[in-house]
Image (cartoon, rainbow, N blue to C red):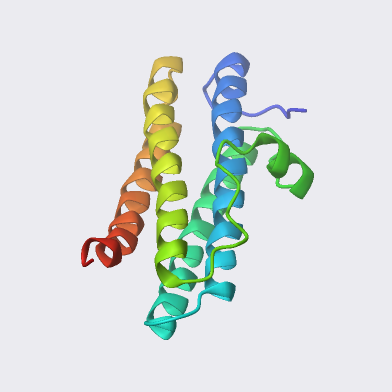
Length: 160
């Protein structure tokens, strides 16, 4: 479904850009839930620090979700944030339910953030190829912040 727009991008470019955005939106929604999974279930040494860190990571990812969804709607399409769509479309691996200790959550969430960051960097190039510099710029913004959040997580793993 799409709507007309006075944005000076062709319908074809807008449709392709929205496909890229929707794929990363599904990943971001999954990643947001994974960060909350870690936040709720972390146990062990450094509990409070990790509990707060995972919540802060969640909050940053929530901003990605809004950026991606709002760009889709700006381009005249419908952002699909339904749980069923997210579950079937995410490119991220399933978060391990058995993770309890801080290190297990750090490793699991770092792996997902790393995979998300890689997909976002690929989307930067793809958006450029199709001719949507603004969407490429949005992906660049998300990529920089993803890398920063990954650094925060991995710093805890590198201390071991």
